[in-house]
Amino acid sequence: MRKKSLEYYKKKLLKLRDSLVEEIKQLEERSLSKTQRDASGDLSGYSFHMADVATASHEREKALNLRGSEENLLYKVDQALYRIEKKTYGLCIQCQRKIDKKRLNAIPYADLCIKCQAKQEKKT
Image (cartoon, rainbow, N blue to C red; front, side):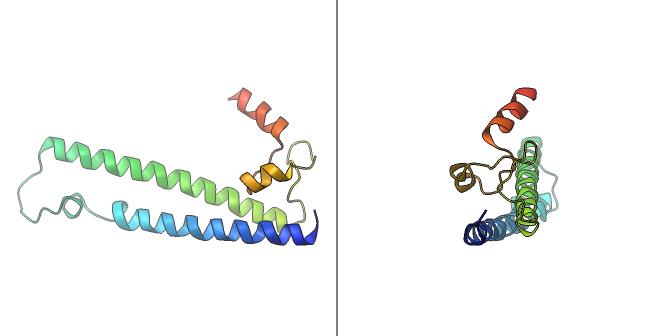
C-alpha cells in the first residue's frame, strides 16, 4: 500500500481510537464508577426496593457489556495501527491477499479479506 494511503488510514484509525477511549471513559464515569445509592440519587439510609436493585443491576450489566465491546474494538484498532507500522496493513492476516479498499474504508481495522471473513463467520 502506498505511503499516502497508509497515512490516510492511520489518521482515520487514530480518530476512531480517540473516540473509543473517550466513550469508554464516559461509560465508566456515568455508570460503572457509581454506587447503587449514587446512581439512584437516593440519599436516605433506607434499603432499596427489589425492582430498583434489579433495574440498577441490569443497567450496570449493559454498561459492562458495552464497555467490553468498546475495548474489543479498541484492541482491533490498535492492531491495525501496529500493522501500519509493520507495513502489513491492508493484507489479510490469513491468506496475505490485499483487502479491498472499499472494505478498509468501511472498516479501517479489518484484518481479513471478504472471503476469509466469510469463512470465519461460517465457523462460528
